Image 1 (cartoon, rainbow, N blue to C red):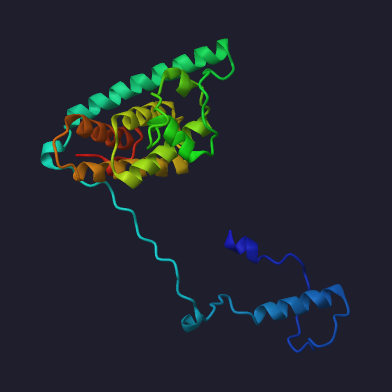
Image 2 (image 1 turned 60 degrees about the vertical axis):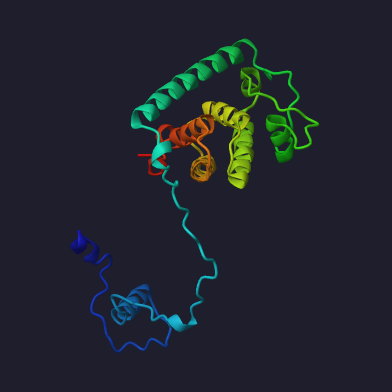
Length: 243
């Protein structure tokens, strides 16, 4: 193959290396001969010499994100428990997808009369899901109609808002856990990179919250273990999984 590329495409006759290259070529053959002479004078391999002292060093320090904090032995879920939760969650997702398809076929319109916040209203969604701090607004449980009435961009955005709340407070209330579970059941696969990053943040935040528990609150432990388990084992972020 290499010999084929070396075969001359044009017959130009003998080449006089003493051609004065400062004068313009007088014919097409003369031009080709000049090209050949110049090519002979070029190195086969050219390596640029870089003055490293003139290169700017990166100004952005990137700290790699750590994985989940290992659970204390007394709070560590068994592999059998984790496998059961993944199987159960898989059934929930299948049932949700079936109901969603059936309802959209019968009634392809918003499926809830509940007044929900705008997609970009982070505080509105936090108050809607969890209730406001001054208790002027009560929380709303994640009913099937509400979740079915949310399109995929809204599902992903609300999940992001709630995960940011968990990441900030390092605490997952019962209602927060219910909302996260419902939204995870509605997340479509394959995961968008931003959603995948959000889920990983969720698992890390839950592991930190678990490591800070001072009392053996079985419901809180189960909620945190479950969310970590689903992110790691159902959504295949296995480097974050409990052993």
